[in-house]
Amino acid sequence: MMQASRLWIRAAALTLTIAVVSACAGLGDSSNDTLAPLLTPAPSTTDPSTSSTLTDVTTTSVPETTATIAPSLPSTTTPAVRPFVTGPFPTAVPAGRCTAEAIRADFGTAPQAWLECSGAWAVTRIENCPPETECEGVNIFRWTNDGWVHRGMTYSLCVLMVDETGMPRSINDQILAGNTDCIEPIRYTPESATSNLQVGAKGERTRRLQRRLIEWRLLDDAADGYFGANTRNAIFDFQHLAGLALSGVADERTVRALALPWP
Image 1 (cartoon, rainbow, N blue to C red):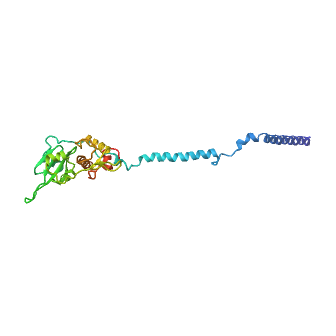
Image 2 (cartoon, one colour):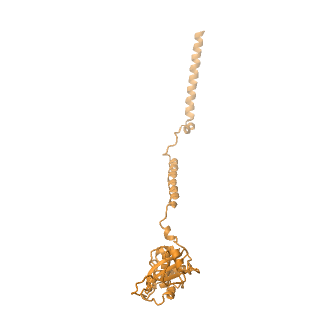
Image 3 (cartoon, rainbow, N blue to C red):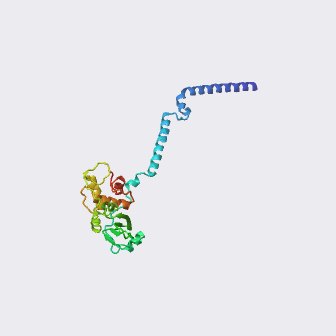
């Protein structure tokens, strides 16, 4: 009886094994397509969709960083387009300020000789001239928004030397009448479309320059488009005020400092 039971159990186990094997074989045959996605390896970086995604991230992040940094870098053109000073500028000395004491307070040294003011300008003879010489030099001062400034000592009989201080010819004629030495005739020619503006130029660029000089009260004349002595003196005056190189020429740096476009 015990032997019969064992035989029956073995037969049953064998039958179950055959059934399981058959079932597994059938499952494998019928579900290859169904299980394939589950058995597919994880996507690699060589997959076209994955590669494009990674490439996009890499290429878009760099320009964003560059664009953020670039505006913060200093520009070398900024000093050229911003004016050093802005007008309008004083055209007259306030009451009580045309005195040696006022000049001493602002300049540090008071003129001891004859002193005369006109408009925003003051002129005094150079002191301590040797008695055997005829003293023809003058000290020239200009009234500004910051008080008196010294424009230098110059030979009073040469009007072109006085021009370099920026003092207008109209003021020169009042204070230093007769100093007409060194005057040169001016011949006007059409201005260049791109070059510096200087004495002898005529055209619309000169007219635009003169309008700004008039607006800032540096030029007491008409904007006629002719670059003459008055316009040059106004340029000299502005270059003094702005700390630019003195030339009397409206070069690019001077024009941009006047807040005008170039050319």
